[in-house]
Image (tube, rainbow, N blue to C red):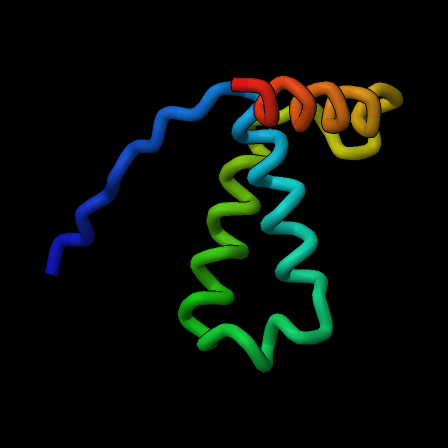
Length: 76
């Protein structure tokens, strides 16, 4: 069986905020209780794909960039 793939198009702001949200959910103690294992695996896959295309989380400007991205997205 061939696995079909999809491509998502996100702005850098959307990708940064979504990666942060996915990281918070997967790190949550309740994640295993709230999500089916398949859902959790998909969320890990999404988080990994986003992080590959973003500046490192440990970059000096990460927190400032994340805060600015959230602000811009709130005012779209």
